[in-house]
Figure 1 (cartoon, rainbow, N blue to C red):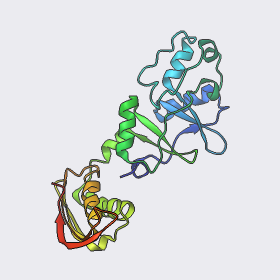
Figure 2 (figure 1 turned 45 degrees about the vertical axis):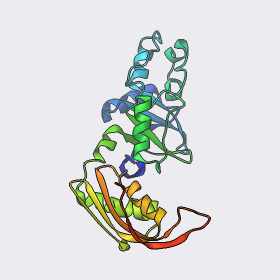
Figure 3 (figure 1 turned 120 degrees about the horizontal axis):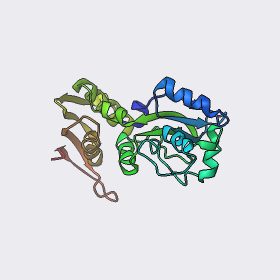
Figure 4 (figure 1 turned 180 degrees about the horizontal axis):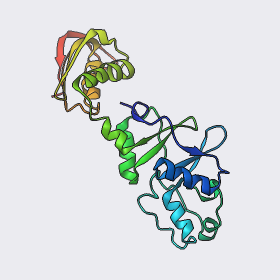
Length: 234
């Protein structure tokens, strides 16, 4: 599963010239703790968080960041106290640059970034443009899926989108998070990849793969035909 499958597409944003009063109103009305700042073409410029307002209210006397201030990731110097104290627009108060992630990134990668950077959400950027936002809650929800949904994910995300295989050539079933995959492929490497990739699907606890292959391509220089052989990751 990828970030684009779980992210929120509608993101509350403001322009760089937005008055801080308007930014504060958005935070209050939408009950959110941060607003992204984008230019006229949708390019991500920075983020204004509740913590930025707290520093502003203190006259910039403290630049120590709370966990909320790291909401979107703090990528550099928060600015001199004097500059932040006299901020009047989003651009003058925002945090920039911002830690981001691509929509095609695996959610495991997003989880890794959030854990490593100790942040709760990531703006999703595609070719420089903001296309969504993903939160820790989004990642957690991706694990709460039915067995039928997990089986569909294996067919669509593993067999089709990742390995470019014909899903009609396989039987995929999931019971209590344990997936069973039966079918056949041309090469041994493809059989091995099916099991190794399917177990990465959020919510899948284990994979039993009975996938047959006809060509052992372990030696890429001299692939040789081999007997039908079931592969299991165990």
